[in-house]
Image (cartoon, rainbow, N blue to C red; front, side):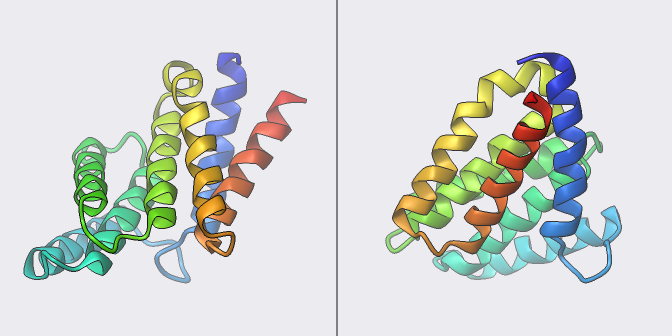
Amino acid sequence: MTFQIFKQFAAIVVFVFVGVVNIKAQQPSADDMLNLVAKLQRLEAMQPDSIGPKYQLALQSLNYAVINPHAPQTEKVLAQAEETINKMEKMKGADQSDLCTLRGFLYMVRIVQNPAQNGQRYYMDVMQNYEKALRLNPNNALAQQLQQKFLEGMKQHTN
């Protein structure tokens, strides 16, 4: 795939996620999103054995990163999201479909950050994680939405 395809794809992915995976009805500011991530970090620390706060922390961290792929805090937020996903994978009772969805979203953010470098590197990881998430739970709405937007973005830019 060419750099131009991934550059256009990244722009569409960012635009789509702003509409699809919003934290609030209105587009939140980067500061609002970081404040929410910080609150979720505190909640997660208070409930270390609970999967729910970890899931929300990872999801909102990825939302921030996909909307602000080049912000100074993004790498730290992404590292936290990846660490949180890794913790969830080790927990008994973690929903494997949700884990695959979060992992696919993480790779998708990496593509948005640098399409030329990360597009070919993570494309299959994104696809495989969303496909596995939907095999495990065909009703996983987030996996459905993210996969659909990813495929639409790719289809539009490969024609």
